[in-house]
Length: 258
Image 1 (tube, helix red, strand yellow):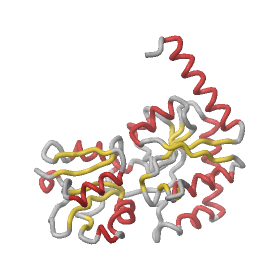
Image 2 (cartoon, rainbow, N blue to C red; image 1 turned 90 degrees about the horizontal axis):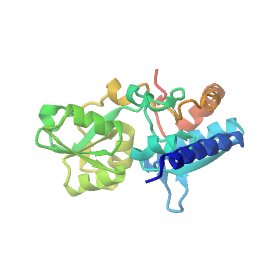
Image 3 (cartoon, rainbow, N blue to C red; image 1 turned 90 degrees about the vertical axis):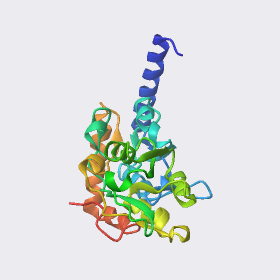
């Protein structure tokens, strides 16, 4: 364990590095590339997805270079605070609980969530329906906290590091259901051949406790300059039509929301 004075030095060093990075026209975004269509890693190692395209467009608007730093989702906030990157751009919902730890940009989009189960299972996203069932969620996600608060202890909530791991256990029968962003479940599983025996179970969940104020970019508290720059860039992308052009590559509905 670092001594207190060394801990302070490490923290100051991290914050200085973060400040220097976007001062030098480099913005580093933390991302967990396991959430198609928002972010995913291609076989050649490149990153693609809606969040990736948005981040690159924001950097271009700010005449900055984007650097993507891969990070498991449950470690995003600690890594941001430690200066590992400047912002979290990884389907990161703006909620009251997270606002206590980080600041947020303007909304990027909204992402309703859904339960997925085997066709004919008759499951619904309710405590009564899921009693005695096992549900997979991503560790550190809002889906995890919602499932544990609403469905446990009647349902067994199993947390995984990535969404791909959740789908693998759902397909193998080790899980009765998975809970994730609706579009993520649709594109990541239901539209694939291996997902043909599965379907959405019940209506999408739009509870504020899970979607918050929508998905936004998490920014270190006190980094007001970067937050204002990103907000201005978001407005510019929406006004120019670039946001809609990017969104139409991935969605056939208004993902921005009201």
